[in-house]
Image 1 (cartoon, helix red, strand yellow):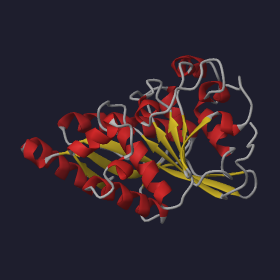
Image 2 (cartoon, rainbow, N blue to C red; image 1 turned 30 degrees about the vertical axis):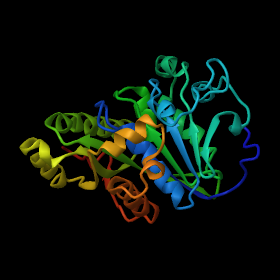
Image 3 (cartoon, helix red, strand yellow; image 1 turned 180 degrees about the vertical axis):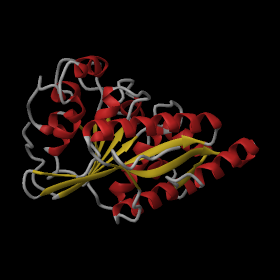
Image 4 (tube, rainbow, N blue to C red; image 1 turned 45 degrees about the vertical axis):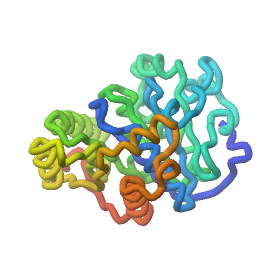
Amino acid sequence: MSMGRYGSRVSVMRIYAVANQKGGVGKTTSTINLGRALSELGRRVLLVDFDPQGHLTEAIGAPAAPAEGANLARALLGQWSGELGDLLHKVSDNLFVLCTSDDMFLLEPQMYARTGREQLLSRFLDALTDVFDDVVIDCPPSLGAINDSALVATRRRTTGGHSEVTGKIIIPVGAEDSSIRALRLLLRQVRTLCEALNIELNIAGLLVNLYDARRGKVATTTLEAFKNHPLGVVEVIHDRAKVRDSWRERTPLMDYAPDSENAEAFRNLARRLAVNEIPGTTAGATTAVTA
């Protein structure tokens, strides 16, 4: 894949996988707004719509990539090669999107037929270390090969001599009991991956979404449980109409309601990640994280 006009830029790239197999916990909203907040810091950011359902592509107002053409699924499988710009949708000067396509629905079964399938996204992103400061991946609501590939892409590694890749897993959760059960399953998946591949992955922590204390004891006690969890809470996003309105307008919250409390919450998270203020929790073959 040629870089074309997207020439040399950085020597360290950070990859964040926004992951939870449970639907409706705000993965896509978190991916978009974290990416936009990072771009406000002057960082060059790539959003990856790694969910075949394509919610990120739709929410950002971008067209889906053409099936059987220049798209991420075909690039991962080695069925397409060309310039990076052919795959990207530009949102702003520092924010780009790798959109989904119908071919994404066919990607996972083809991945299972390949050895080293967990490394497919890693190898693709490693070629972009001189282009982007940050990559934020919107993961699918599943525990399959696509999700595995996204999680593995966050591992720390050196590529091509001087370039370094590091990353973290960010886990969006809802302030509800079912999110606690889903968290256990995701952490089991992380542990299994680390053991199978003999790698370490870093989990930044829990991003609590759609929190509303007015929902009573279930919301408040669940939030406290998350705050006391070994992973900790990196930020709390409140359930506000402006978040839903920005989604309907296909506009990041930082642009739709720049002074809102949730916009500031995403900015705070972005600032802390940018200066590596969130050490996270390491999960590995011998250092399991339990719920």
